[in-house]
Amino acid sequence: MKVIDIIPITQTGAYANEHYIDGRPCFSPDGNTVLFERKGNGINIQEFWIVDINTNIESVYYKSNTYGCSRASWSWNSKQNKNQIAFTGVFPKGNLPNGRIMLLDENGANNSAQQLTVTGYAKAELFYPAWYANEPKLLVTDYSNQQPKLLKVNINSLQSKELTYKGYWSGMGTVNPVDSDLIAYAGQPITSGGYNQQNNKVYLQNGNNKPIIFSSPAKNVNGRAPWFSSDGRVMAFESQSGKTPLQIFLKRVDLSKPSTPMIPVSNLNFAAQHAKFSPDSSRLVWAQNDGEGRSRIFMGTIVY
Image 1 (cartoon, rainbow, N blue to C red):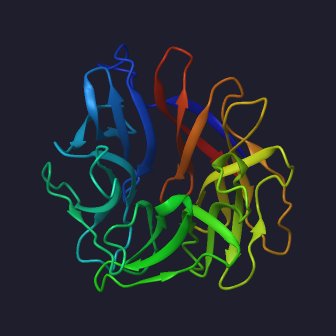
Image 2 (tube, rainbow, N blue to C red):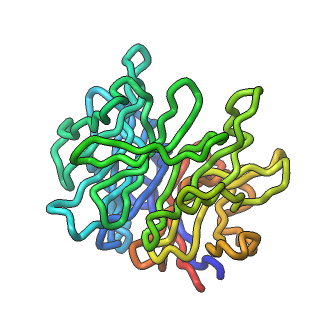
């Protein structure tokens, strides 16, 4: 397994010299469009932009006058009446909570997204939503008090269930599209020293079973931001040691053999983050610094 034909797909045409900071991409349900967040160079409040992967034409998709738009997850659930985009609304300091889960109807007008107020968590710091494949539900991180935990949230009833295994901190999760009991996240055992994201590793958790380490188990290597392929067989994630920038890796998902090889994807010289698969799992997108003071969205083709 490898990724070939890697190219930047943002800041290549009319915006080639703009030096924006682009991040956290995701694919549309038809796989022809990539949604990403953009800031910098005159954009003071983070906005959502889209790029057509066939033409590389970029345009503004959604923005708010009140909050920054971050880490979108576009629903591919054909059973829903309408496709929606769940994302984190990042509110200015002094606004509590600072992080809120927002729901945007596909092609919705600016400032139209609605806050998802989870019962019992109205004041909680909620980030990083990820859709369940065939349910009107989201996997959400509660970062309140720097003690991250994962919630399974029903967007209709607004009820939730905590999924984090006892004795662990967990956040930035993803749900296996084929087996919804299988989740992955950036986490670590609870210690007296408190939560430190640099100590995170990617864990796999199957139902209520104790999680197992999926990324490198080495002490000085972390793991973050996992995301399953649409067939549930491969996971992308980011990792770094103390000597290297964040890099994107692929790894096959096999609970019976959690130590399958990690396949490097991104350029070793530049930090890369937040990889996502296309709906047919044939392509991968991620954000990568380019050494010129900007971050761009890159895309490659996966050869299995």
